[in-house]
Length: 351
Image (tube, rainbow, N blue to C red; front, side, top):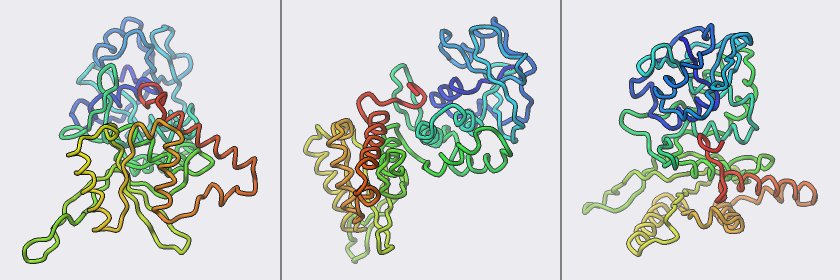
């Protein structure tokens, strides 16, 4: 390869475009890092091939400090560590000699420069089923010839082969808190807030699954047989009660739910009743209005917690320690402000 796109540029491109491995644009390649930095004259060609903003410097990976780019069109990063197979994707079909770091290597790169919570958000995005398109970053579902960039399992497999690579430890720690299958940044943020431990700003309600298929009885046939349909709640959370038994709750994020028409409200009521009657699983809808109002969001979380039948872990951990209690509350507000409020960051755009 002659040029290897990496770091923030790779993150933005991968989250904005169809998966190059699924679409046929790219293929995994075993290659050494470039022996030289791209020339200044190459920048417009690369930017055009990948539809990048020419005004924004490109992150590139090079083999040694002496070979970092001298041009302001690039930000050079040195690849010191031995890299596992599968670390690069050739984009020869877009531009001869061009490659990009794989989502798995990218995750480790991000681990070297981002705080743990931000790295978890990046992991959710890389393992998601959506991409961000257009100037406004509109959410588009990856389907047909487009698939998630990677998965929790593939990231784990890469880390197993990563030896002593810098960033591996932080990446492994973040991976414990990531789930596959989110279909929007808001879904990811909701899952993080519900599931992350208290010290990371979450509410520690339990383990989350994203857009998991749940079979729900919706009616009964004439001969008395149960008729079931597959439903995919945005988030299913599983909690363990004090006695050891498991409890579940289903949650959907609905950006339009605060101004639903009567037909949509009726549909949501039927959906809620189906979950409760068929599975004994409470079903909730979170609106944008609730998500972007901290008091309303906290009330929503505690409603979900009560439905799961679990104790408020905040008070279980720190009810007699006012200083610790305040520190945990600050972390929860900080996480909400960064990822759920109206000023939230979006991985691949503002993060």
